[in-house]
Image (cartoon, rainbow, N blue to C red; front, side):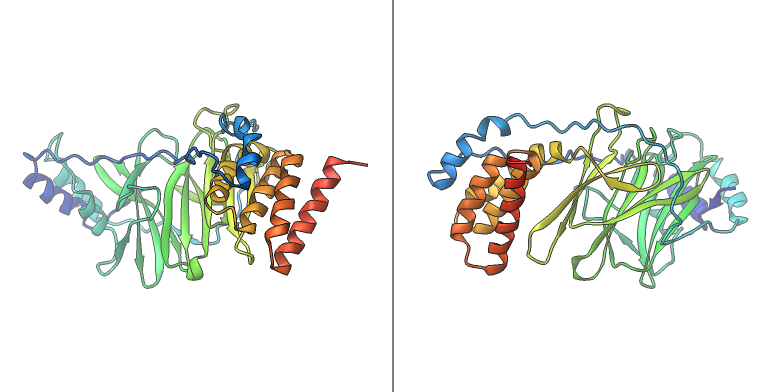
Amino acid sequence: MLIPVQLAGLAVACKAMQDQQKNKKYTIKSHPNERPKQYTPPANPFYSFMKGLSNSLTNPTASFNGQKKSAGNLKPPSGEIRKPSPNIINVVSQALFSKLGVGAKEDYIAVIKNSIPKDARILVPKLPRGVKEYEFLDIDGDKENELITSYIHDRKITTLILKRQNSLWNIAAEIKNSNYEAISYRGTADVIGSGKKQLLLGYEGKDNYKELIAYSLDNYEVNELFSHSYNRFHLLRSVNNNRNSNNHLAFWNKNSNGRYNIEVKSWNGAELELSKESKQYYYSRVLPIYANKLKQQPENPANWYNLAEALEKTGLYAEALYSVNIGKRQTSKPSLAQDFVILEDLIRSKLNPQ
């Protein structure tokens, strides 16, 4: 049984009768992922190096050849997921609301405020760009959008999922987490290849630590699928799966040297695992980003290292070795010099396998 929002029906009813003649519309804008800008090689040592790569970098693709996955066994949730108790307010609210007729405009902020504690603060995620206090997202596959919002109260972040039933918005589930301070991301994607979308919440804590947690909603029950740390992440489409599937994710985590460890992972039915399709991601997304940084700062040996590592991941070993040799001559830091040596040994072992 769905749970009615406390007094939400009464508030909505009053507001609707006042606004019947108004024509406000609430729309949610979508923002496609930004792609790296094209670059022109400058007149520096980077120029001759990039001439040989220009043809390879002008036709990136972002498709993946992943296999369709099923949800499998779900992990027990790390955050608190709660279903509230029934409330008799629903009877009164529904009776009053039914007299308004079809076409009455709803005040969704009023619905939200009547469903959360009085002194709670509604959170607006930083991403995706353009996101507001709430979204309409279908996360249970019934082709009906749920109303989703997040708020903080008593140092605990709660994400509220409301479903419409008999013209009323009722609380379907709550996801609580007291380990973080803000919501960095809130959206949906089919990250497990099941054909329906999951809810993705990016939490942000102290020292800019971020964690992405994926949830599914089935029969009004919320389950945590996986969690993963990140500084940034990308959702990657798989053309061999459902057309709307994003069952590959790329996670960027900054290490102690200030560089990024990049992992492309996919759902195997029970958990995330390293994907065999990472080469395509490095080719289409990572190489252009690092090449552009190197173009801007060719004197920075760390930029040469990043590009060399990306080239090695892509399988362009000769170009990677060239980048290593330039970076080694420029660096004065012993730790970075040692990293260059390790990377060079790895590249040479692949150039000349025994």
